[in-house]
Length: 292
Image 1 (tube, rainbow, N blue to C red):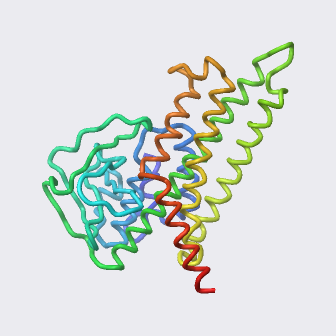
Image 2 (image 1 turned 120 degrees about the vertical axis):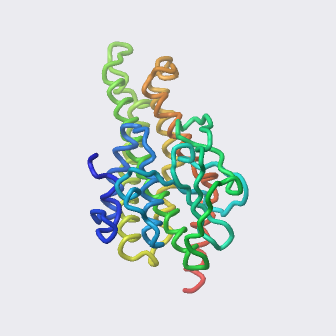
Image 3 (image 1 turned 90 degrees about the vertical axis):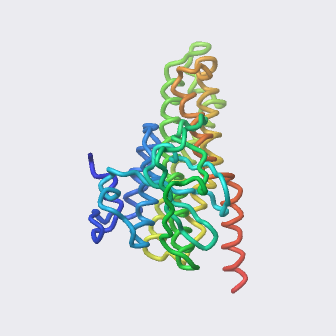
């Protein structure tokens, strides 16, 4: 309703031409509010369709949802897709092809700690299979979509961590022990300061990565996945600390800190093992340094 979907696409496809820096701001707010919407998956898949010349008007305006398989390493056969249970179309790699799958009945949602609309997707069981593009250029465009997905997911984790810090800080200012707020204790204040550093560092890295991906995509390819790898590790640490600050209240199912903790862990693994992204970063850096 507010144009968060159309803003992500170029004006040539009926969008508003927002930059990736703009999109990181939206992603942060999604993480901050734990918004139960597959926005990141949809806009990354829609932008991919646009680059491949296959985007539909209903995808641009959000009337049809598209998802993609965000695993870094190309998989074959059945795989978990974070937005698979709500998507009208699912984009996957099949060898050197980029394929759009459509199911008459959407795959069933599977329970997951990230509370995502995740589903097992079997490409061979799709009712419709459309090859959108093939070859090295097609795979490069898909990799670009993966980089954008990790950039925006990392940004969502930045927002999540910042709100987690706020929850813990507010609690620590009103909880007293020995006549003083627990926020005055180093065991509380120092970890909260570390979380603040994580938020600022993750945000700066995300915006730098977004600028390079938009303006000089071949110059610093490692930055976008680096945002994700950094925040995937730090988000769970920060959310765990917030739970510890609240003590017994923090581990209760109804506590806000618990809601942030489970999503911090679940969102980080929605695209498969974060270690695969770390290996991808290492390969990029090794190749670049090998040329110097």
